[in-house]
Image (cartoon, rainbow, N blue to C red):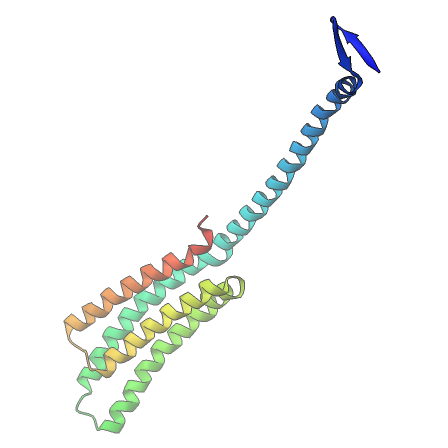
Length: 180
C-alpha cells in the first residue's frame, strides 16, 4: 500500500518508522542511564579500594618504614663501632658478637615484614614480593658490609646513602597500586 504525502508517494515502511521514532529516544536514555550507573559503580568501588589501601596499609606503614630505615643506620653505626672495637677478641668470640649484631638487624627487619609487608603481600602479591626483595637487599648490604669489616666513617656514610636509595625505591613500590 502506498500513501500520498505532499504530492509524493511514500511507502508504508516509512510510516512504521515514524511510529517507532518516538520510542527510540526513551530507549536511548534508558541505555545511557544504565551505562552511567555501571561505570559509576565501578569507579566508586575502585575509589573505595584505593582509600582502603591508603588508610589501612600505607598510612600506618610509612611511619614504620621510616623508623626501620632510621634504626637500620643506627644499628649499622653501633654494630660497626662495636665490632671495630672488638677486633682484638678471639675469632670465635668475635663471630658470636657479629652474629648477635646481625640478629638485631634481622629482628628489626622481621618486625617490618610482619607489620607492613605481609599485609600488603596478601592483597597485592607482586608489590609484596618487590618490597620483600628490597628488604632482603638492605639486609644483604648490612651483613656483607659488616662481614667485610667496613667500619670507617666513609663506609657508614655509604651505608646511609644506600639505605636512603633503598627507602625511596620501597616507598615508590608501595604506592604502585595507586597509580592509574
